[in-house]
Length: 324
Figure (tube, rainbow, N blue to C red):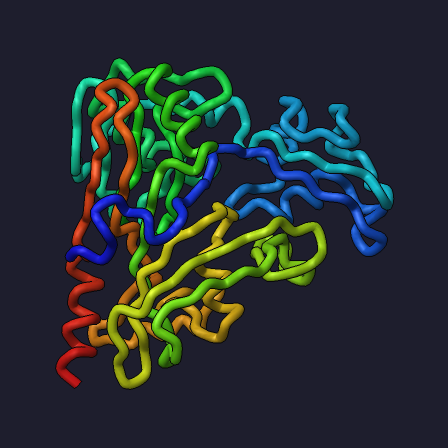
């Protein structure tokens, strides 16, 4: 499925950089509440008790300083969430879980992640993550200070597809630097609701926390960062469209938020879409797949161009659409 020229230069690459630090400026409606309650409202799947431990560990800063969980926020306070897991959950343990190894050499491996698998441990997902599985598969992999073992970039839990895992600190650092320099290309396939009228285009809209639902992201001018997504129509159906997408920026939930913003949310997305699964049996997750991955190997200098076909559940949906 050759969708781009040989050099892969049609679009700019995704520049998601592995970075857990998020900063918020407290506004009038958010003041006078405890810092632990505020942070717990932002972090998905993290209990208030775990948030309190993260604060005690020094993982949350207010105006550049550590604080107590009981600290009362003031208008203008700068809250930085520098870590999203307590120290007790960062010591991931090996756990033998199924792994679809798409590519491997002595320095790195590329996993075709299944939908439903969380990438790294967090409260509620301590021993069932990609990190746990990789540690069991490759026991020599260890934490690099400040980084989870081998992880270079991320995928949402219910997004399937290709993800790079470095086997050593040197490779991990080199790949993260490639991310910073916009040299790693990641492309996605998504089935969206409605018929997209233009053949290709871009969505240029800043993304930040949804002011009404703080666990979600949204297109907003408040506390946001620039975000740019390119798309191309691959196939149109009666009520849906199959898109190929590529990010120029790597904001949280960027593809899902941007597609919602233009009125074409991803099929099956329970947060940013209608949740309509459009298939029988119903699809139990969003139709989003990390399809292509192009990058330069840090050791050999060889350009790796990898492509993971759609998994069975997503292929089944398209077959249903094509038969109508």
